[in-house]
Image (cartoon, rainbow, N blue to C red; front, side):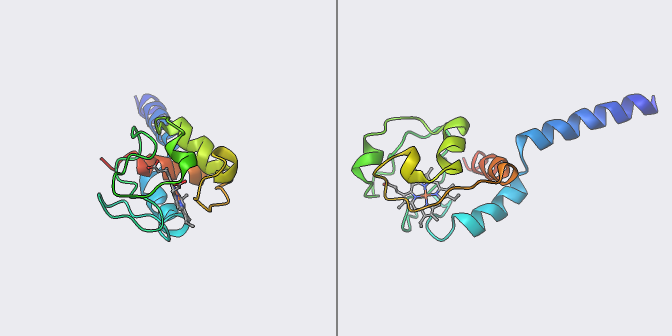
Length: 121
Ligand code: HEC
């Protein structure tokens, strides 16, 4: 019985780890992204609001002036797409973008961050 409890506990922990830690992701957001982004709906800074970014179409904040590059991207921000975009210099993921960000190379931080972004709906 105890062994079974431990086994289930481990499964739970490992699935949580794979999914990322939203609280840690909120901290990553503060250090990496908050200079240019808020997560408040309708509040843009240098970059557009990231409220509801997971599942959103590129360049869809109507009162934000996007680069031509991002306006022409026409993709949906899935968690996979965010992984690709945020793990390398944005200039590489979307040549011509005006997001001046060098990329987040720490895989754990990236997972945590994207898990956090996925809570903003
Ligand atoms: C130095 C400022 C800056 C930093 C730091 C920054 N961004 Fe951006 N971001 C921008 C700008 C500017 C744009 C608009 C890009 C364009 O129009 O080409 C943007 C666009 C985006 C978009 C596309 C939004 C949409 O509506 O299509 C996403 C997603 C994004 N940023 C996520 C992030 C995340 C997550 C971080 C932190 C890891 C981050 N950015 C860090 C400035 C920044």
